[in-house]
Length: 127
Length: 127
Image 1 (cartoon, rainbow over the protein chains, first blue to last red):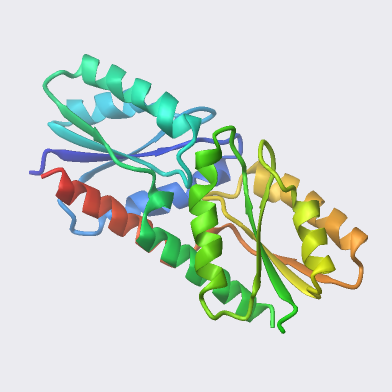
Image 2 (cartoon, each protein chain N blue to C red):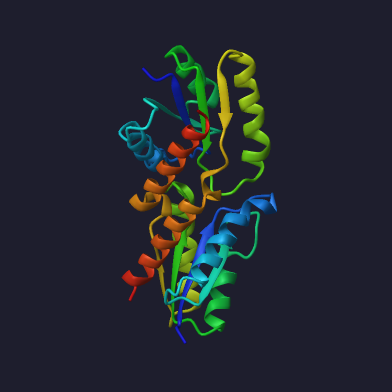
């Protein structure tokens, strides 16, 4: 059993439908064959669970390494200021667990390429 | 010269660095050879230009068809409620211009696949 968890960290919104792509992303990762059977969502605000709750659940499930991936386009205050504080609190609560934080997904070239392809497809549909 | 414009519509943030992936995305689209030499950014709040300003600039540049792509992961209140109102106002201001609005990029399977790949890569780096 893998002890590696991944937490997809999003902003959160009032409309529950906002979370649908995050749930589809989590389902993809669970079925990807990647070494991460533990995939959780967590939100900064307006939605639950919070990061500390999601991390605590992964630790309770036996995870000894957790990677937090900010599902944000840009790295503004939420990713540069709020998230590190939340991650530090999780590390303090679980000193024996290795908790790492990735760069925001929107900074990844592969993600930007996919968004660019989507935009171009939209132009074609508009013709 | 193509008369087709694309507006990448994002939320906006206080930190100017937040917009960097949007600027990289716009640069990719401008260099993609897609039929869209006119690529603009627009923001809901905290950053400029607003959607109406970006659309007006594209119209002034000769665009007769404009596709607005919401660079959001989920479709919450901003995309479902705020954006249609902004687009309707743009249509009213430019009745001879065809203004279409795409689904949020985060709903696209190709974008979700790219994010999933990025997440899996992060796990590998953590090993």
